[in-house]
Picture 1 (cartoon, rainbow, N blue to C red):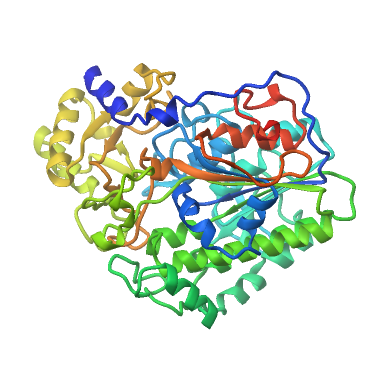
Picture 2: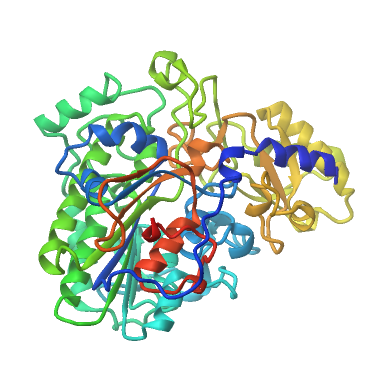
Length: 578
C-alpha cells in the first residue's frame, strides 16, 4: 500500500478548527446536577448544524426549538470526529462517546457471507423479531452484537448504577433505537415495514412480554390509521413553507416514486410512512405512552428517541424542499406538545432534555446557482457550489439499473484485467466495497487496487480507492486529521474504501438517481446542533458558537443521569458545568 497516498488522503480530510478544538476537562468526581425524574435524549436524524443555524429563527416562538434555546443552551456546532457520517456510526458515537474505530459500528449496512444483499449492521441471525402487539412476524432480529463488547453505552452504565431505573428507546430504525436503549432496556422498538407495526428483538424481549400500552401506541391498528392520513398542507402551513422553500413545490431532482413529488402525499405503505411527519408522530405516541405508564412510579426514567422522518424526507426531496421545511415545522410543533405533556405529567423542573442530530445532509445536485445562497460568501459549512453527482454503489436485486454502478464497473474491469469474468464484488454499501473472496486468490492485491482506481476514476471521477484493512492497521487515530482512521475498526469486514471527488455522494438508492444523501467528512455532514434544557444544570438563554466534540453530548447526558465523570466519555465537555 502506498503510505504517502494514505497520508495525503487523511490530510485532505482535515478540518483544523474542528479537529484541534481544545478539550474542556473537569476533575473526576460525582456530579452535582438536579435529581431528574425523567431524562430525555433526542436525536433528530439528519438534523444538520447549518439547517438550524439558518432556520431556527424562522420557527414559531411557541415551538420546541425556541423553547429549548430560551430555557437552556443552544450549541451551534457539535462535530463528529469520523469521516463516514451515517446514522449507525453517528448514534453509536453519541451514546458511547467513542468513534467507529472503537465501537466497531462503521456503516449503516454491511455485507455478510451467504447474503445476496447488504443488511443492517445490527442484523443478528441468532435473533428474531417480536411484534409489539404479539402478532407473528417473520425476519431476523437486531441486537448490539456488532458493538464491541468492551464498549458501554450510556444506558448500560446507568442501568448498572440504577437497576431500578427504566430505559425506553424508540425509533423508526433499528440503528436509531438500539444504541439509546443499550444492552438491557426495558423496551426498545422500531418500525418493521413489512408487517407495518413496531417491533423489538428476541435479544431484548420474548414474544408475549411486551406491555399493552406499547401495543396500543405502536401496533398494527395505530399504524394503519396513520396510513390512511395523507400528508397535506393547510392554508397557514402552505403560506409559511412557500415563504421559505424554493418557489415551486415540484423541483428537479426530487423523488417521484415513493410519495410523489408534490403535495398532497398519499401514504401507500409503512415504508412511505417513514418519509412523512406522521412517522415522528408514531414514535412520539410511544414516548407519551411510556411516560404515562411511568408517571405513577418513583422509579427514574431514561427515554431515548430517534426521530427519523427528517432523514427520509431529506433523502427523497432534499433539505431545501417544501417537504423538508414542513417536516421541520411539524417536528417543532410535535416536540413542543411533548414537552407540554412532560410539564403536566412529570413537572416542569423534574425532567431534562438534550437534543442533537446524528449527521448532516448534502443539497440536491439539481439546485441552480440562484438557489445556493450560501455561495455568495464564504460558507462556514463548506456546502458545494459547483456541480455534484450521485454515484450508485450497486443496484438492488430485481431493480432496473438506472445508471452504471460501482459494482458493475469493478466486476468488468477486474474480470478483464485478471482474465476471470464474473462476480468480483459481493456488495457495496456507501464508500465500502466487499469483494467476492473466491475471485481473489491468487491475485496481486496492489494490481487490483490500481485497476480499481483507474476504472472508478474514469467512470465516476473518484479520488482514491484504498485498502480498508491496511489503512486501519497502519493509520494513527490520534492525528488531528485522521477522520478516516477513526472511521475504521481494525476488525473491519469491508475490503475497499472509495473516496468520491469533491462533493459527489453515493446515491441513497431509495429512489435511484433522485434525492440527496450524506456520508462525507465535509463540515455540512459532520456538524449538528445541540440543545440542552436542564433546570438546575444549565442557565437559560446560553448560546455557544465554538465547535464542540460529539462526546459533549455523551458526557452531558451522563451528567444529567447522575453518572460520575469517569463512568463514560470522561474527556467530553460536560455542558452542565458551563
